[in-house]
Image (cartoon, rainbow, N blue to C red):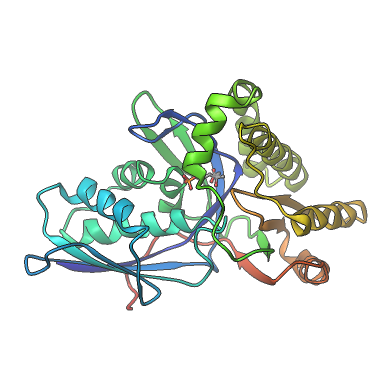
Length: 320
Ligand code: PMV
């Protein structure tokens, strides 16, 4: 009763922020994301009747804060009467810091847990299971560029573009490796209750989805850039106007944004996006990657740079 899976995090270009059902963790809006092939989480899950509690290790260190969500996810996949499990997670990037570690972690956990109990692969079911723990995790069940849409009582994912069809690059400027001050789940609940911009955010998501979907289908970088930056800034405006205000950015985040705007002015094909954290993700064409990396690395407060192409769906042919 043991299995291992590897999954990649995804970053949303058209963001999810807010829930239409907090109990089922259903998102209030549709979303669209890129899967980051260079970043990964490996997850090993083993069930045994000899264990007397669930145990979680992250990068070799016993972890209690994340255990309850992990146990909740296993209850959902296997059932509440299951054996206890030992879960070992390895991640090649900082976790809980706005780099979408929950998307790779919970998608890998769902795949590994289903494999451990010999369940047949069912991507939409796995997406629903992963999504009910972390909204963004559902999008990591397919590679390349993925859209998540809401149906009446669940979600649906669809691959819009395979990784190789449109090979984009993502340069990530890490400006703070510490854990975020407030979890995205808690912050989005506060936003829905207190931001005066929240309803406008929800109402304007469909046109952004339509534009981004079309840009992906036509491989239109400029169109994708414009709608993605705008959607990101709208989400952060909702965060900023939440009571109490949720500001994930730091000075380096802003300086990176300005630098990328300058590069755009000088003709580089690049755009930025940020999630619930201060890291900047610069999406560009592969031929622009080196120049973008060089410019971001010069900025005060950038502590490290990671680069990634687009990645595929979770895999299980790895070892820990
Ligand atoms: O999946 P969660 O609960 O960590 O929420 C993710 C929210 C954002 O990353 C900010 C946006 C998104 O669509 O991924």
